[in-house]
Length: 69
Image (cartoon, rainbow, N blue to C red):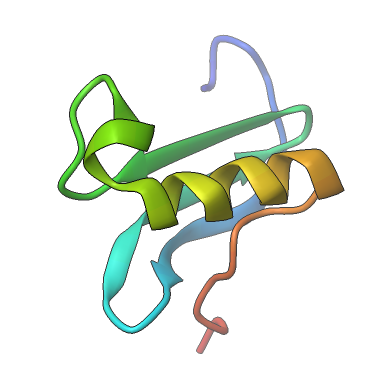
């Protein structure tokens, strides 16, 4: 991300539900999300995690994350 000169807003953290659902890293204007246990068709393979991801996007927030230590 150094090439894009984006400021890190949220460090690499884990999404939580009852288990680790994936990973989130947020930059100013850009967010990377990895959903564990899903291929390219996330809603088909992990519907609950996909709903969390889409809801977070619509509300303009990062998915639920662990608090930083």
